[in-house]
Length: 226
Image (cartoon, rainbow, N blue to C red):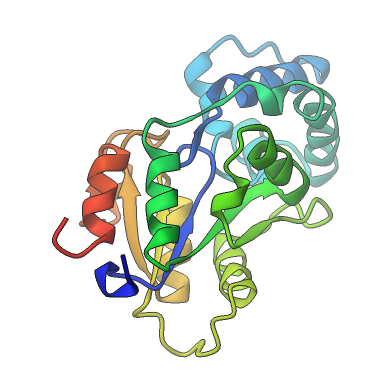
């Protein structure tokens, strides 16, 4: 298989809700942090809001915390997540096969995720999917509000893309509004996935036209004549 079969030369993926189902680890770690800070959150749907955005944004936006309180929340969250939470996940069906096919076709594949670089690399190694990625652009723990557009640009730079004035050969794939807004800001194409954690209608409300319900459906958007 050659790059002629590819619709995009550079293929960027979000991690949570796109490559892996991380709901258990994130929600349990969020509940742990909130409880330590005096908030007994029993509503699982509210805890699921922590999946996707930068951690500090979740604490501040959903629970009205100050910058200092959010920083403390992140510290406590990472006590649990860094110990066991990051393992409480699984790779979505068909994703390893899709990543392998992209690599064999000559695509340059990267992750662009708001999850800290440290945890991202641990996860990729633990689930044996790191070998499919040419670059990993995760968040810097010292910059808690890492924006998606910056992560996308860094991923492309790591992949060796030289022409940063045109992005016709680039696609970002993700499940949340943060992913499509980041792609729009940079100027790349975007493909949404509906098997992740976006509330119903979130991507459609932002005008996303291509939405895949599975890895098999995602493949059809990435290869010619699939």
